[in-house]
Image: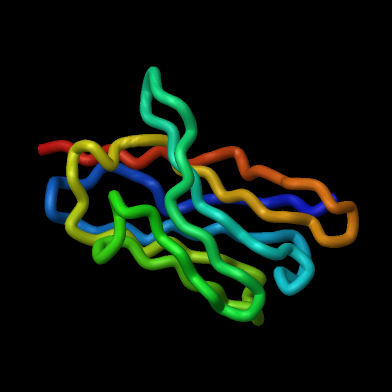
Length: 117
């Protein structure tokens, strides 16, 4: 089964930027679509963005214009570029992928993003 590993989280001031990475253990063309979710303390896990193997992207209204999902097939990695960060963006960010071989969803372990002055 494919493994997904997120990285790039940390502490950033409001208005700052971060880029999250989600590295897959195999070719991401077989992990389609791929998603970013986030979960704030005491809240449900919410969808943030998604990207298909063909490069079609979608973003939640709450992050549209500030966050951008992208992929590097050669690096087997999906990214989430986050700009103009707000305190309400504070959450654990998770990567999810649809394993097309096993037809199951796979989650990464998450990376913490904290937006605070």
